Image 1: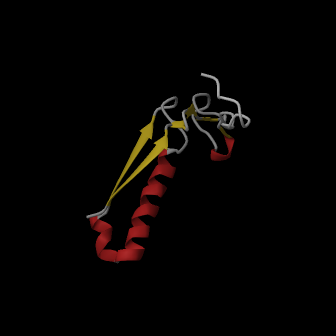
Image 2: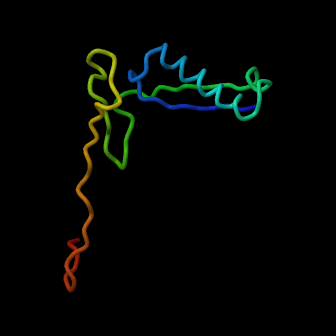
Length: 95
């Protein structure tokens, strides 16, 4: 039966919030497939240690993680690499 996997950055969700997330995911399956799926649906929540989550090669860390043990999703610091631009026509790219 369904196995739903969720990976979260460590310290962003409290134990209570993880429980609510699991319950919500199970409820979503039940809404689609019916009540008989409630006892058959499993949720696996894995927390990724801070410093091991990258987006486009850039490490991302939410504000507050590792300091107070909690973080807000709207506090994510996601430095973006500079955009890749083509060299002017007639000139070769360096390298």
